[in-house]
Image (cartoon, rainbow, N blue to C red):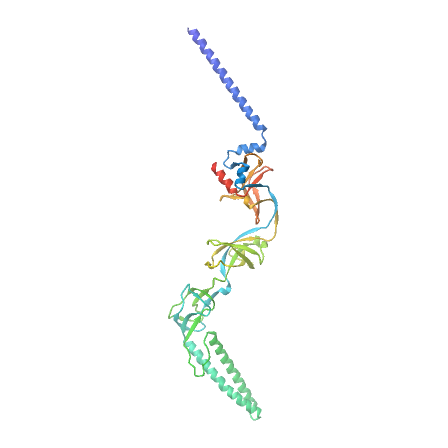
Length: 406
């Protein structure tokens, strides 16, 4: 009985070893078969198979590509016009800013405006009471009277000279005194007219004024008012500042390396960084011939038509897009519509099986080395096969489909 049991155990062990040997042989055969199949595939297919499970790959049929309006393109030899993106600020034109002051000393009696108020050229700003104004009018009245007296004396001496009665030296003296008196009268009259006081009636029994109205020299808005009622002001005292934002330009800063690509009369696009306003067209009026010390850039002074009804103020930020002059021929140019910018970098979708029933696209990181208006020059960050095709138009659809598989 014991002998029989031992014999049966040996038989079962031999059967198990035989089964294990057959299993190993089968696995070995399947492995060899898989390796043979892999070696018979083309390198492009092998790469696509290896990447089909990658998070950077998306697979679509030609019908699906047509539905999402995605086409395929090759690298193109294309002349590129440089596109310059530059920052800038809005600035008032020199004749759109005015500082208001008085030509003579006085004390403020009335203030007719307030900060932020719109004013027209010639509109009253403040009223001054001035002793100096009274003295100036009195001096003019005296000069006017001197002219009248000396004119009469000159006429008398002139008649005597014509009758060969008068002395020539007396006539010449009367003539010189009259000319000096007239010069003084004209000087005082111009001073009064300069400060806005009429001289009609002064010296002829007319009344004088002790008040002076200071008026706005331009159309615009009161940006600052510096004094109060009762303040004593001098000619150097700044009373108010007026700006006219209707006359405004954009100062765009371009670095030295881009200076050769801009010229006066060039058209550029201006966008307002912190305002939801439409992009406007501008023209480079003139280019500064000096480099700004603060930002090491050359300033472009750009005229533009401001959007109607929109508030624009000095020092607001703008961004300019300039299609530069001159060209560079690139052999690896792609349309801008083939580039994906996901916030972390620039990418394109490439495939080496553009004729397959299901086309695998791989997301490839790139570097943009030159920029043109419609095309850019790219450099892939990694090796690619020579026969690739690049997805174009609506590459965001490919990115959205790719993310579904993450």
